[in-house]
Image (cartoon, rainbow, N blue to C red; front, side):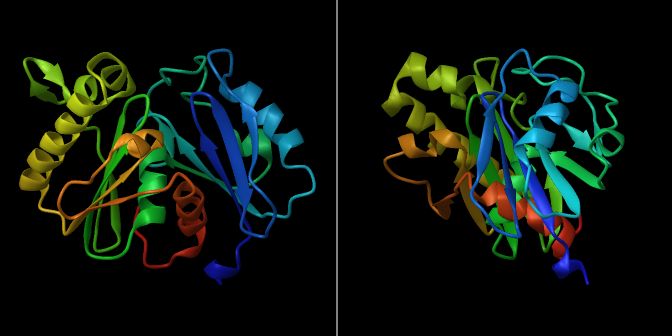
Length: 225
């Protein structure tokens, strides 16, 4: 039975790598950063997960992933991720998806959901009737020749200030909602805490939902990724 699988979820970020097992225990984490490549992380994981009980691994990766394959190197970590064989190095079956998609899956509550992750950059995903689709919306043009990420990313929050940044978040959500017609929007990522209010039909996400999404990759029989 899929729901009986013991899963280790790994959330790979630019500042930390966090892990949680669905068999129990607290979140464990290590510092990542620009010196960490896939091999370094794999070696660190084998120490970090000591004592945990799991059969399979889910990974949320900060970049595009298609059919379990990383397509490009991450912005905030060292190169050496594309083509890396995690299953061989870690000795367990591994499923890899984009990190925003993993958090989106953990936030999903049926129907048509648009997920936006406000962090260093802009993560995006959509789930329609249990079919999960990563979306690279961040670099699409938004305003004055600049991208959505240029206005909604962390650098914009620091440069423009919270009020202007929040206005751009509302405008972007309105534009994307008109284009994609979701039933509801989930806004997650670390910077959702800087929003005083939320756009219509939107609710706050939680970074912890990334682990729920990682578990669902192996245990939710309805999910199509």
